[in-house]
Length: 195
Figure 1 (cartoon, rainbow, N blue to C red):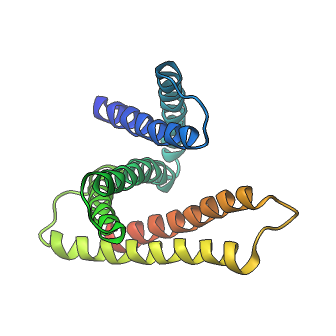
Figure 2 (spheres, one colour):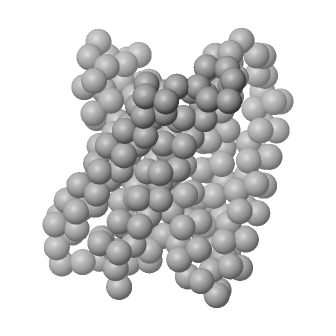
């Protein structure tokens, strides 16, 4: 593992821990500095193990290693999206939809660069703007899938198996994210960063 990969993984893990701790605080649970450091260390360890397993399996099946890196890039891009949105809404009196549009676009740029240069190890291309346009369009399809699956699970089917609505809502978010991640990885691998 390269030093830059180690640094990226730790940054991604600690940024994810930051968001998870915010959720815990939102639920009224106490999160002090010690807990924040422990959660950062625990997620860093989990992300490093995840990366190592992906790297080992990737020796036989390259797409597994690419998918591992794709998920780590996606985790960091999600944090960028969320935290930038919160910053824009809190700092400037702008409409939430405008703030979300800005944060989404900047997160997509981060995803593009991380996937291009790290997950799929592409070099600079002559037509980067066209490549980014394809990437953005395919990411928009992923966003539509994400929202569509979430809508279907929450509004059409609703909670199943006598599950509490709050739990069903969280599982719906996760299911939608998984569908979108599978779409995004497949689209990026075969349509944007194909070798």
